[in-house]
Length: 206
Image (cartoon, rainbow, N blue to C red):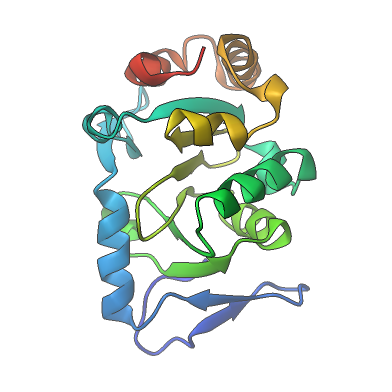
């Protein structure tokens, strides 16, 4: 997705899709909303030495949030078994307009913030468009977060009732997290999930 630039148009059309992503205001407003997203995040170093983002334990603990891991593919591939529960849970929170942005480090940290309606088709295309990025779906009220780590995994975070309701029953709990871990490590190598799962361990749903 394009970065913030004062010369860019206020919307972005996905190639081949009759869908427009609307920017969440002028460039300065987008920067404020992007900075708001980063209040929930922190940098950390991957085993490869790359500095990436993740949800902050300080934020999770202070707000009594819980987290659940899923594979990213149900989001990037617009799987309604996952998107419909997410939309229903978001509607229950009274959120009718969401925000989404890439949450990369370095120069890529300056990225556009998109305003998204609470619709499964839109959210699926949003995650698909960001599948080569770390991205965050959130609201201005900061009452939930869905952090997606490229095509690899996603973390649902929020009050426990939200985190459970936003996912299919079979995708919640320790067994579901173990299944995600096995799939990621099969593709990316044993132990690649150790540090990230250790980070989130105090807040995982069981």
